[in-house]
Length: 116
Image (cartoon, rainbow, N blue to C red; front, side):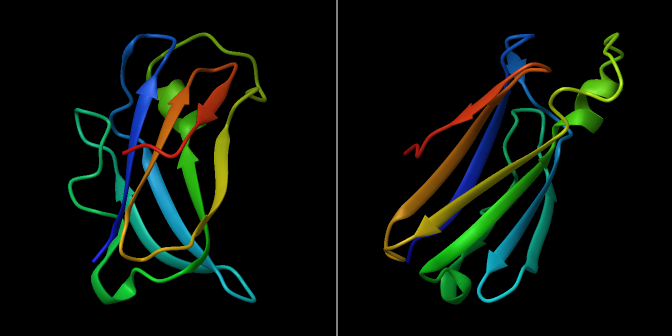
């Protein structure tokens, strides 16, 4: 069975994004929350966000509380923040594969890709 994982890197500091709240939603005719997690010291969640029987084809959304993370770092940033919540929508087409969705984030930009 496949699984969904994530990893957050703070590209402004060159460190893992630890302590970032992550919420996973399933988009199937609505927006249904599936799971909440917080990244660990390595910027990863301690277990897959989705796996087993729950890992199904469909459209999903990951929401990263990046703004809360940057505020907690004590950085002098303007309000409202330029990057606050990062919302990533993606699809799972093959539930037998591993889907890894990394987030590279700074107070001024973010990017993602399908990792391995």
